[in-house]
Length: 274
Image (cartoon, rainbow, N blue to C red):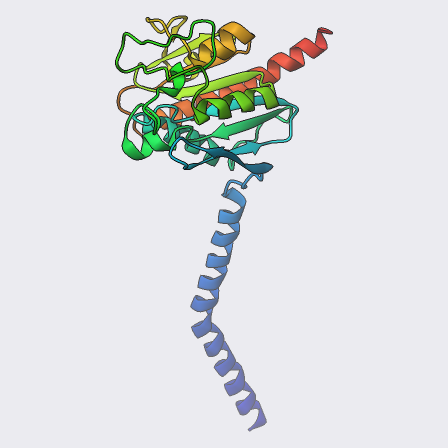
């Protein structure tokens, strides 16, 4: 009798194990999948970030910036200098998002202003809230009080606009090794000052035409102010007339390529004792 009861107990235990095994197997499979997903998921990179309040626009909207990285060599990246070029701000914001996936070169910091001209973005107009083209308002030797082109209104005097002065303050504070200002719709990479090599690197990355000249005079422009008169490498990245996800992806790559080029050039100069 005892032997019979023992056999019944063993059979019952085996039956219970068999009935539970599909659930156990399912849980084990789910656990393995979770472990695999955890191993294959890209790690989020924590790039050092400091947010800045630069000041107010002509119509008293806040203009903000962020500084990424801890390097001593600074790059300034500007979007939406013209309010009717919103894709420029989209690109700059996409670059910021990319810093969760791709680290900055340790020697560099990037000062990012996604929207230089919030008044223009809000009104979908080239000008700031005072009706001035910020990119014709810089205090250059070529600044002109009168513009023969209705699109390029230089303002009442050089640096009369708060947006212009905020950029000048950034340049004076950070003494950048490169300035990249994103515009549209000329679909090219243009440069001023000693920026030909980095412009060429960006052109190879995004496939855009490389242009030494934009094709018309730009008195009072940032390129003239920083690149020509102060010998600061300055690139004007001109997006195409319409921008899609691929446009943004290619130009995020172009911006990272420029940063890697700067870092590599610095290392090479160090090895050569320059």
